[in-house]
Image (cartoon, rainbow, N blue to C red; front, top):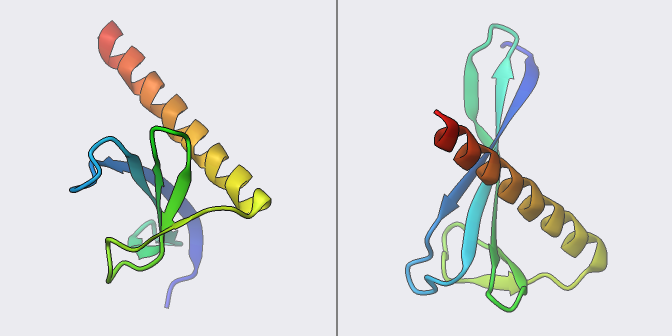
Length: 100
């Protein structure tokens, strides 16, 4: 078995089926082994931000309509940082596409 040596993090935005005004994305951690082969995603975090700024997390992949409002201050700060990173990367992609 090959040892895991690196991590690829992807931000996958999506539109929620019933809450189209929510800003949703999945944060996917995909690891690569020492030969460079990607392994299956091991961590997937799904977050949503309502128009009023409330941040939620999906509590179960098996129940996609079950969401929990993040109230813990440390978890809320971490989630906000993830949204900030996603927003920054999206802006960089738009700028790159506009200049191409």
